[in-house]
Image 1: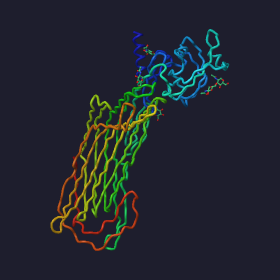
Image 2: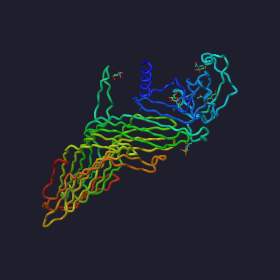
Image 3: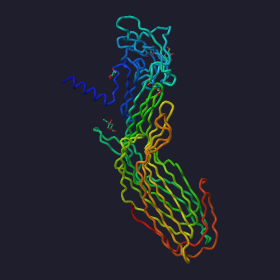
Image 4: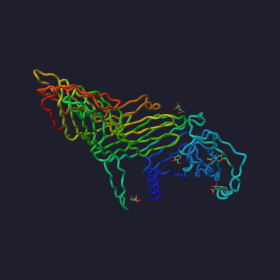
Length: 500
Ligand SMILES: *[C@@H]1O[C@H](CO)[C@@H](O)[C@H](O)[C@H]1NC(C)=O
Ligand SMILES: *[C@@H]1O[C@H](CO)[C@@H](O)[C@H](O)[C@H]1NC(C)=O
Ligand SMILES: *[C@@H]1O[C@H](CO)[C@@H](O)[C@H](O)[C@H]1NC(C)=O
Ligand SMILES: *[C@@H]1O[C@H](CO)[C@@H](O)[C@H](O)[C@H]1NC(C)=O
Ligand SMILES: *[C@@H]1O[C@H](CO)[C@@H](O)[C@H](O)[C@H]1NC(C)=O
């Protein structure tokens, strides 16, 4: 009964990711665990190979390292076997050179390093303070060894055969609109503000002072704005990465990120200038989350970003305004990339949202705008000398178009088309060992909604007299100008409602 309890207890400890510094790695396997914490993802790496390929220079194997640094893996250490019965001699099976060794927690920037060179120094003196405490019981003076260590696994010749590894890592990402308070027994623990409610972002902004044709000037613009009313996401990122440390290689990778979330936003547009405008790849929000680092082997760095692509093209005077609310409930998302096995499942609902559009255009006036907002869960994965970005992107696209064409008599036909698109894509940015040959993606969800599609015939008003002139400069990337004053529709056309 007691034995069963102890076994169960040991399993629980293992599941929690606790390193066992009392057991030496002498049988061809070794693992290192990192506990999930505020600054790190949780996870474990296990290496395996032939019995002589992997060894241990921690006190568990009877070694005492006299001098080492934790700032790098590349270092030369002086070490003394203080308890041969624990297996110090194991490292010398088939030669110490090119053996992958486990380091004590306070030595090296990573848990496993390669022995680049081993020698026995002429100077065998042991500082008295060290030797007194750690001398072997049989009173034989222990030998001092020198090991030159590094994580340059590619330099190995495979003397002891391949050393493979499997790493598992898991992290949580909470993105919240406001300060969340969590009771912790002795008080409240406040999480940092990530994306405040009703955050506003300017997507497009060009301004000119134009003459209105009656000798007066007026302020004209092309403007696009995004308001994020709220962004809430709960993501748990999971990785299983397999490969070999010797020789450095990644043979398989599995990425999953079960996610739930809720996003509410508003995209608005106003235009009284003509020209073409664009702002692509604009980063609006970028939040970094705890990393998983096995220095010398691999690292995973998760982050969450919101970015936008905006572009518009306007001819003549349109006085076009539009506003589209969007609401996305990501009720559940499950996927495994790149295998897609088991097949991904996604449940998205889009609660009813409001929109409006209005215009007072010239004949042949038209405006065509597209705003794409990307909510992106990113994981930068680096191993040995290569890296790749894995991402889950929820994309909301708002397209607003207005077109005024000549109609019979003194009339024009004004058409509006408003569309919303939503998709969810998981992707890798480029090649990565044999796991990815090139950039690729898997579309998990895709939907398009026509919000408004309508045409109306309206009478044109009187033509104003003079030409217009621009007064102030514009954003250099854009090319906008004051439209020539011409007859406008007699009335403003206006639509509003709800979709989907
Ligand atoms: C090697 O040792 C580890 C821990 O010391 C143990 O968990 C594992 O089962 C052993 N493997 C073999 C093949 O003996
Ligand atoms: C340890 O001492 C040796 C000389 O005794 C030196 O060469 C080596 O750089 C030292 N290592 C560190 C990490 O300080
Ligand atoms: C032993 O003494 C040396 C120098 O006198 C010192 O740097 C080192 O930290 C001491 N080691 C221990 C284990 O006390
Ligand atoms: C060692 O790894 C290399 C590269 O991944 C592979 O080609 C070779 O087959 C492996 N050798 C063994 C014995 O598994
Ligand atoms: C609970 O939160 C308080 C206030 O932030 C903090 O001082 C305390 O250490 C926390 N206690 C635990 C058990 O996390």
